[in-house]
Length: 435
Ligand code: AMO
Image 1 (cartoon, rainbow, N blue to C red):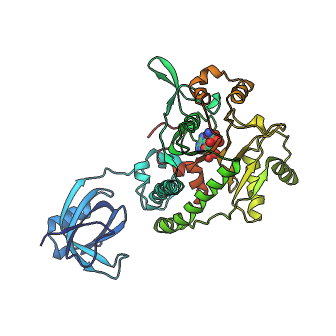
Image 2 (cartoon, rainbow, N blue to C red):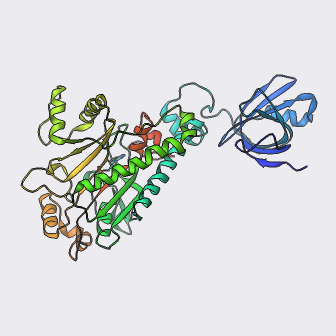
């Protein structure tokens, strides 16, 4: 009888003989009998080794394996009331693929507190813990669901260059690289390219890709490389069309995350609660007043800042809202590509905040060539260094708007994680370039 190749998800009592591959999580040797726990992606399996019933050499190897070694165990599947799977494996053969060295850089099952830096330095080991992997299973699902939502709305997925010749989001967060002897930069966002695509006829595009920011501050919500989910759409009447699109995306993603991510959420002991729709709309001026009522005085034109955003999050939570728009930001605060609200100091732009943190910004773009060039100059930018972007506006550009959503910021708030680094496998920040 040949043993079936199984994992901890597929093994069943119908298998007489099975082989399971994984890591040796734990060994309990009681003398006459030993219990070895094998772990794989889906769970754990108990290997029960009665000393008298199996080969002495096999018993010896099994019970002296260093923890976290990688093995394949073959044996007979037996019913058991003592294990979560309801079965156990009585071993008849063992293949050791790789013995783990000891001591381990950090424990997989021990409950002791480990410093975040130690965890990140040894991410391969940290991620052997199911509750850490669950976050990345959910991140993968989130990105799949976003893709599905976009497809439903007839958006085309595009990829734009990450090596670029000019910045789109201000000079202070640019990473410069040497590009065959010339200066180039890592893309801070796909902003200029997604807008250029609006003049091609592909009138609804989206991209999910890395965005790079030389963030000099060390915070729980900033990293130097994050996953940006960007959309851009033509023929809009106003920025409200863009806002409705984002609401539709959230309406698709939240329930599906809860449903299709149930297994992983259970491991995390978390629940995903869909935000109430439609999201309330706050004007920037309303926010200043709300903050003043709580004793936080900001000047007109000031950024709301981390503390301001948090406080507004608390006020909105009291009213039962986790997600809300902040619109009518002062034009001076916003980048050149955003349309001004003529005759006012405001702009056609929005932020989307979720539980007291900005997760997205966007708005209606300035699609009129002359006005765009003028806005660049007013912001101290040289239109000549944007000529290939500007060309796309000279020969027929539809009215358009779009957004950028920080995928990790969305996930962090969905799962109430304490730090954006918990949502990035190998985070990059001011102090970290490895692993
Ligand atoms: P903005 O600069 O606001 O807008 O970025 C959009 C969203 O990206 C996320 N984000 C970050 N996440 C983690 N670490 C960072 N350092 C970081 N910086 C930004 C945030 C933010 O809301 N081109 C415009 C978008 C547009 O108008 O379409 C842009 O990049 O969630």
